[in-house]
Length: 307
Image (tube, rainbow, N blue to C red; front, side):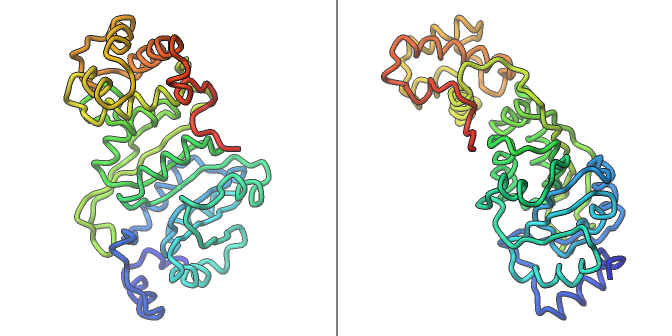
């Protein structure tokens, strides 16, 4: 059975046997090319001392390849209909466990504590577009103890996620990704390698988690808030959204921009991540002059850190 997990005929047969239809709402598109699963496992740099959290295993094609080279795989599947399919497909694998649940609601740190014993951990997934950003942001911002995230996403999303801040394709998510990790596009996957065939091509990306942030930030909460606000109007002068969409005064913003050596007319999409760090720290110092009005943004604990 495991050798046919990417076989189109086998996929259709399994769907028929389980009276299963792919859900557009969940973005279900199943890989039909075993070589791609093998490449993802290879580029994940997994060995027998590495454990894997797989998000959305589908029918288990990638799960099987990951299990062959890793210490343990815990696959988290949202769709209850697929759990019995996975239990059948993966029943011979001794180092694999399937958990039914929503990765956005699951207590990931607790799961890691219960399922893994001090192993290096990599997250692998084939992510639907609608939940790509929320999942990646949760893994990064909550500082889940993992070495890397290797995921397949829509090609355009991959470009945005992996773009350096200050370049044309960057966005707010690019800044968070660059702050917490070293992103890289590994390879592209054409739409013809899936069933049902999606409307767009995909890319596999790798986010190597940084041991420590490479920027000195006074307040991560303030840093990410400035980035978020700036990219709401990415093609307008940075001073405009910072004045109109925050409680900062115009004078505070202009002084901070001057101290950061950033033109008030610069656009968010043209400011590098080091520039945002300087601006954030300059605004932090301005807000310290009136701390009661901005207590939440003066918090110097790590952003969204949950224990």
